[in-house]
Image (cartoon, rainbow, N blue to C red; front, side, top):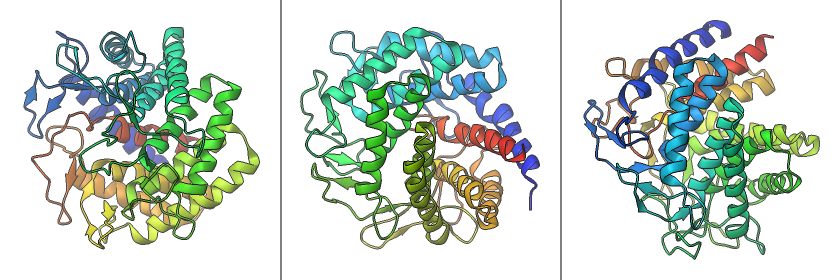
Length: 400
């Protein structure tokens, strides 16, 4: 067994030597602003690829967090760069909210207002405020929160609707990506509103935000977590009738710790007790059903019964945080063993020791999908850097 302090040292070294330098060295667009939108697995940069707001917001979050932890001016410079591009190119000055996608010069090419995207902007902006004290970033985060509540909150059934046009009309295409169902509500959007509101509440103790975050936790427990299996239901209609029976192991374990974090930040003991019970049952279910023989966490159990055994980069990252959270709460060594095995697996197979960063995914025989890129609108440093930040902070706390 790897002692916890040694594990923390290994993770911190990987974060500072590999993950954070990769995005500084390869992705910054000094000419047009922001970050290159596409880099292949073998490091071919497409300097004219479109740039996604989600990628920009996640980089903003990652380097704001890195600057807070290490006080390294290089990280602040990247955070400032991400913030500037968000302000200049993604914020809609007329209708409010952030665009989905801009071209490489920063002009909008997809101006829809997806709530998932607004949430990540809040997440990044609130972290940037923590790092810099920049009041403008906090004000913009508050404005985005108000827009979500105004346009997306479902007064009749609670929860949030998915997507809108530039002018906040109903968008016929509600999907985040081509593999999603075109449903009125999704687990994924609710999970990341939860994450964003939690971070915003850390710096803005607003009663309305507190009320909505509390309700969102309760909605998640009442509707999104299956009452028998303690796994997320992924898609719903407006009235919360399930529209999917696919199991996403990565979202389940990620959700287990994000839910606990949200209740903890609210300092609501009654709610925290309820969340802890559900969170641990979610983690246990992934521990029992989602881990393959080599210690990796599989992708999905599809509704037709097919088990997708691909090892996706973000699933491994979130699983380590989720299992460590469960270990912290229970002191059950099975969870720490899962973290240790998964870190060894990730180090051996998922991290690209030649070119840097993490591979997008591997198949069940641990062959890399080389046609999947290192950088694109969804492939970002947020999951794997956050795993590192969380483990460093949690082990430091655990060790006193």
